[in-house]
Image 1 (cartoon, rainbow, N blue to C red):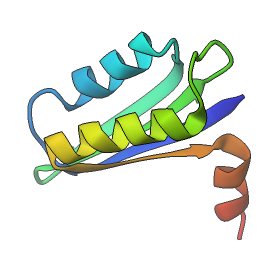
Image 2: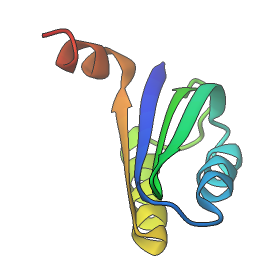
Image 3: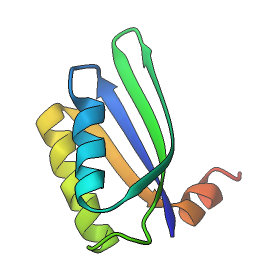
Length: 89
């Protein structure tokens, strides 16, 4: 199963390291990543593979939200099919 992770917020040191480190600990493979900074606002989108993950999607979502709170950014994870459906209109 694949999912899309989006991270948006004010840029600061450690955002990519914190998110990718959490994913590595949970055995989530990053398949593709894009990141940009627009006038101090950080935006990142990741396509990840969850088939080797050792916890539920809800628990990963909670863990990423906690990282987002600590860093002051918004982190969302959505199943790839839900993401595609939402952006098809």
